[in-house]
Amino acid sequence: MKKIVFLGIGLSFLLLMCGPTATVTTRSGPTIEEVQRTSPHEKMRIAVARFENKTAYYVSYGMTDMLTSALFNTGKFIVLERENLDVVIQEQKLSSVGVIDQRTAIPSGMLEGAEFLVVGAVTAFEPNYRGARTAIGGGKQSYVAIDMRIIDSKTGRVVSSVTVEGKATDTLISTGMLRWVGAGPLASSLRAWSNTPIDKAIRICIDRAVDYIVNYSMQRGNKR
Image (cartoon, rainbow, N blue to C red; front, side, top):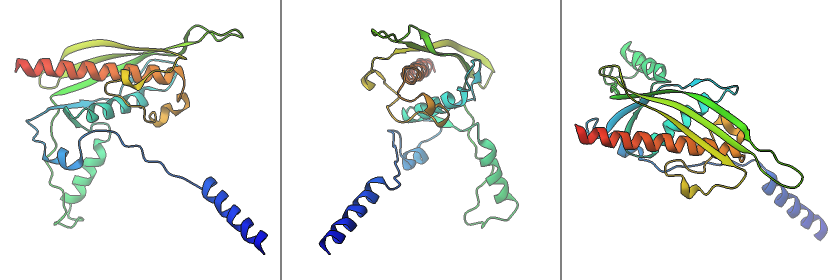
């Protein structure tokens, strides 16, 4: 009888250990309350357009999403959604045609305009940029590059243009060297590259892009 009890306890333990799990990764950034309380005049309003892909790998969507999230997590901008704006507009249309309870209806004409637009292209994505692993050692270097432009939405002028690069080898990179991008999971379309040199090159590239935008916005803010 005791053997049966112990066997049952052992099976329950295995089920707990091997059963389905869920993980939620949180990143630093403003809370919902902080975002809703922020005046549109207190911070620069910025929107990121979907980057064009000019590489052999379909990576521009994931890198655009990572850049947008990193800009939001800095807490320095009002980041406006543009890629999925049709979903917001559809919700406002439902409110306007009378099918939504008026107590919870969303008023139209309240969307905020972006002062600056970030556009660009992923121009290089090379997992095996340099080097090769051999029987006696050695390592590969990966390389990622983004051509990025900042556009003044009022005039349509390109006010800044920069090429941002990220390079990494097999050597582990401390997240301490990343100012704006954490060690959380890559965007879903980039997960195949997790824990590889190109993973680190992506993070470095995005981090430098965010750093450039932050510093540029501060300079523009001082000139106003």
